[in-house]
Image (tube, rainbow, N blue to C red; front, side, top):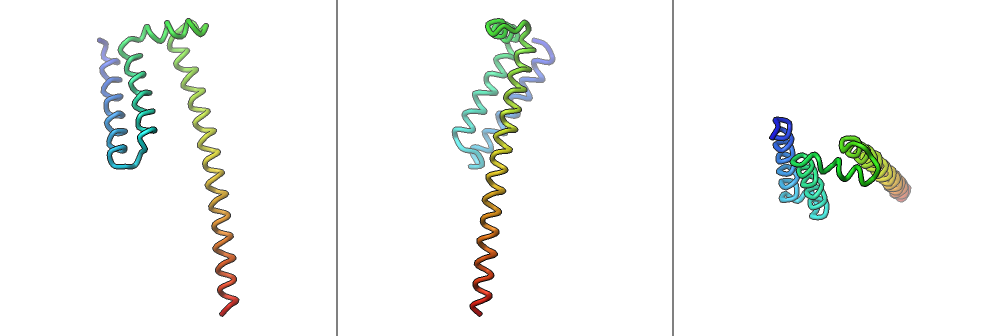
Length: 113
């Protein structure tokens, strides 16, 4: 086992422990916890057997496993950013509606008195 594999395993173990702690404290739902657990388990498998990423990459017509992992990571990150943007827009819209409703209520109450 190479030093980089040991370092990566330690980092993965740390991340998994942090995710588990957030789930136990109720900050994360079970589905999110399970999703991240599966993701990091797959990452650990690729760290343990790097040649596996090359075998999978070749099935998809990509020459090197590192390239395949990079492509998947970039696509996943951009999709995550898209989802985050949609969620932020939805929250901004909800805050705007709530602010308008509160302002109208406050205005009506001030006119009653």
